[in-house]
Length: 187
Image 1 (tube, rainbow, N blue to C red):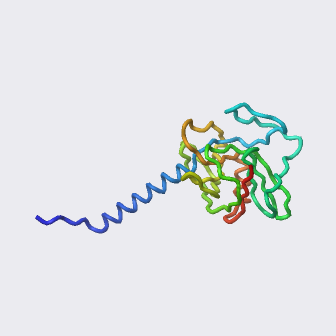
Image 2 (cartoon, rainbow, N blue to C red):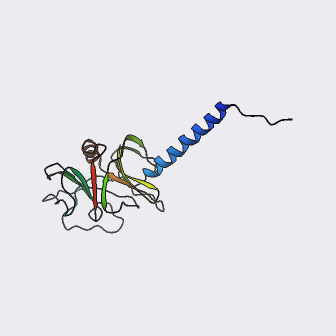
Image 3 (cartoon, helix red, strand yellow):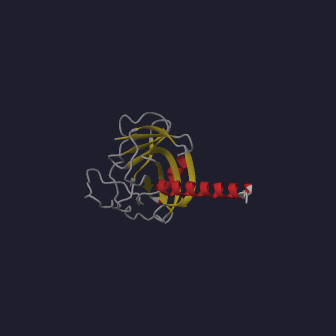
C-alpha cells in the first residue's frame, strides 16, 4: 500500500501554528521584568538589596549623565536605574526611575526598533507601551509599564530583560519614543 500524502493545507496550517507559538514564546520572554511604580530617587539615598524604591519628592532634578550624546534621545543609566527624555536642544524634559530586569543592555547607542501597544508579560501581568531597542543573551530588551501600575518583584531564578516604568512615565516614554528614536545606555 503506497504512503498517503497530507494535503498542502495541513502543512500550511501546521507551519503557521508553529510560527505563532514561537512568536508568542519570544514575546513572553521579552516582557519579563519587575513592574515599577515610577518615582524619582532621593539624591544620595541608597536602597538595601532587593528593596523596592519608595515614592519620594526630589529636591532637584537628576542631571543628564555626561557622555550621553547630544540631540533628541532617551538616556538610560544602568547605575542610577533612571531614564531621561532629552529634547533636540539637549534639555531634559522628564526623568524617572525604572526597574530593570536581570539582563541589561551593554552601554552604547541604540534605536527604538519596534513598538508594541500592549501584551501580557511572562509573569501574567498586562503590560503596555513596549519600546524595543536592544537584544542580549537571546532576549529582547524593551521599556514597558504594567497596565495596572503595579510593581511586583521579579520572578526568582528567571532571566528577564524588561525595563519597567511607572504608568505615567510609560505613557510619556511611549509618546516621546517613536520608532527610530535614539536610546543611549550609560553606566
